[in-house]
Image (cartoon, rainbow over all chains, first blue to last red; front, side):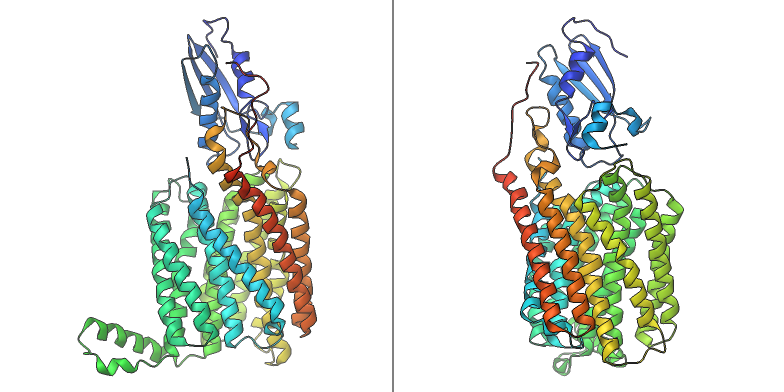
Length: 106
Length: 449
């Protein structure tokens, strides 16, 4: 899932930063929503594979560029790539308990 | 940065027209307690239908159709030009109806028709870009077709009431002579139709063909999106759109000809609406999001109003219905609940979601990930939305009872409640729009850099 070459740049650190990106309709960050599928780190490059709650989500561009902004804001990152995928499709089972509490999704 | 200006200018124009229409009802509640074939009520109806509903629908469609079909709008420039024709056209038409100058209705209507042509062309080209051909695209394409027919029918009715005396002074072989000859031919044909039947057919074309069809189609995308659900049966969804189309063709022809077959076609439309309600109920039952916000509640209440409206439609389409004062009031109630109930409540419900989204997109979209931005729900007051929702329903009930029993004070009371509801919505709107000028931004609690 990830290749770590820099001890500072870890998957956990990237995920922590991605908690700053919210889905504005649901009012919850994309990590607790379960939208982030994988974080791959190669040197100073980060690749995030993620999904959205629905295909054709009008927030797609905002969220994708938000993820890129957040990751590029990390000290050790030189380049960030975001790929939106819909396979597998998102379902509420992918949310964390915190995400469920924030959104009222069951 | 995406711009909210284009859809917002249509939507805000529409809301002003709605406020004007409700104010008119407060001042003249008698409009709804007497038979509807008179200049003032026809002017008011066109203020609501063209000024409010068409403006709001056009603005929302410029934003939503690309979203629903996962593509880009064909031309924003055409949309900006369309606004000019639309505004001049509907404002002039309302005034011309008020003073009952049918020639000027035709002239301003032609201006409006140019705008509608630009709108239909722009959305149709956008549809052609869409990667998917599904029930949503079918409903939107149907609505565009019905919109064109509605406008042509309206212009034909206006032409039918005019005398084109200038025809004799124009060479028949010239282009102008040809157009005038064509108009006279249309006028001659329309003069053989019952004017009330033509007006009722025109109204059904617009309300069912354009507004209902659009609401049905777009909601198959938006309701699942807002409730975290999905369409439960694509065949059922498509059946609802097809039944509406088939029923409307038959209903319009039978209304125009005064045929008793209109009852059968009314039933076809009612079955289509029933299938639609069934699918929406299934979508909502399958939702993953427990709480429904006021926008969705408003929309679902509008869908619920289809039940009494369908009952009224069946009664009014009954061939043996006597033509008396009470029947006239039932027709007024039917029109009022259709426009201020179903269509307006559905659109207001969607606007509770669309306007904050447009403002957020304009103000915060490009800042995500750089700084802490608010969620959509932080832009407005849910309490104000709730109060506005209940006031609107109360207004519908009071005015509806007043129409049925020809009780002017009840109609006025209802209109005052509708006005109070709009006032609360306006306060909320100001709150939302203030984010365009004063964004609420906070630094992240901790940053990696």
